[in-house]
Image 1 (cartoon, one colour):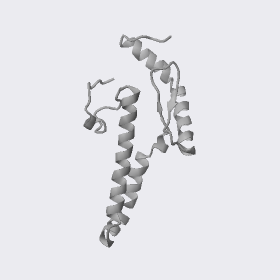
Image 2 (image 1 turned 45 degrees about the vertical axis):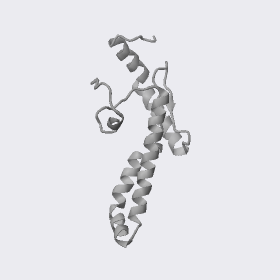
Image 3 (image 1 turned 120 degrees about the vertical axis):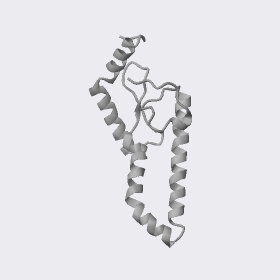
Length: 134
């Protein structure tokens, strides 16, 4: 484990930390703002790439790369994230999750159970001097 300390909002997505711990309210706001910003950026790019014929040609050339970026950022591909701090495995999914997102959330839950996520967290907390829920 490599604790990097506090991170600023502008550092949340730069790869400095793989995990950022915050309370549920703040985490939800961060996710919603990031999602809204991503949608706005993609809509703006789409507008600009259809603004004229030259931009449209460039957009056609960039389409495969843009599709890959969109797929990497699509929450339905991930399904959800583990909710930590409970005695078990719970996956939090987007409120507007479709069938694909729910199916992928179930895969995340299955993977977490198979990997022993709950026991791993309890063990690490015990090693770091935290309370063990066993």
